[in-house]
Length: 134
Image (cartoon, rainbow, N blue to C red; front, side, top):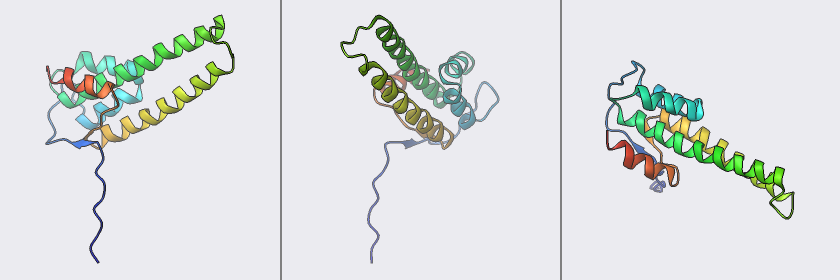
C-alpha cells in the first residue's frame, strides 16, 4: 500500500551552515535570538555581521516581540484609563495575545535550532527582506 504524501511545513531548510561573527553555531545563535526575546535579538543584530540566518531570526524576533510589547503597553494603558467600554475585554485580549506570543516563541526557538527559516506572519516577511540586505 503506497504511503500518503505528507503536507510540507512553511519552514524552509537552510542550504548549509555559514560562519558566525560570534563564534557560536548558527543554530544556537538563532535560538538565543528568541530565548532572550527582543534583548537577545538586539545583541545578535549588533554582533552578527556574517550569518544571514542569524540576522533573519534576530530581526524576526525583534519585530514580533517588539510589536507584542507595544500592544501590551496599549492594552495595559487602556485597562488603567478604562478605554474599553467593558473592562473584561482588555484582560481577555491580553491573555490571548500572550498565549499566541508563547506559541510563536516556542516555534521560533525550535525552528531556529533545527535550521529552518520559519517565517512568522508579517514579521517574517519583513525580516526576510531586511536580512537579505546583509
